[in-house]
Length: 202
Image (cartoon, rainbow, N blue to C red):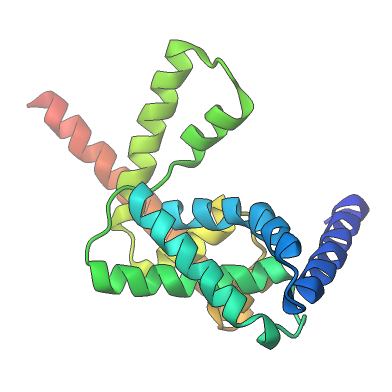
């Protein structure tokens, strides 16, 4: 992590600390600012963890209700975003246990194309759509614990230390799960490729 990134993180922490203090005092404007800043993060995480668009909206609401009720418990040992990730992961896990098999996962590739290129063109749209489908299928078949670590590290760009805070486990546990998750991802990708080849030959 370079100096600029550290400074950005520090500034983000100061802003969050100020808004949290005002939120605890009942400042509705500060709460709206905090929500507007972090809601996209929660939405993206929920979609990547396998929730449908409609269910994601419900879970996001539940996450921020839980955050609001527990503002007094946030001690500032970690960044607010890390604490928020933990609450979001717990809510997604609860929803998945109650809801059974989840549907599609939000694709990193498709999301980035929409964000960074206002007019990617039909060829790039088709490539992004195909990549999204592959990623969705593979992630949907991964075991939940491995998928959580994989999504947080590879797609959400959290460090292993931050993931440990989010999931409430040790850093070495995170590293071990990440190794196994990458191996499972590669295995499922190869398995899918072999099926496609055999299907083409047939």
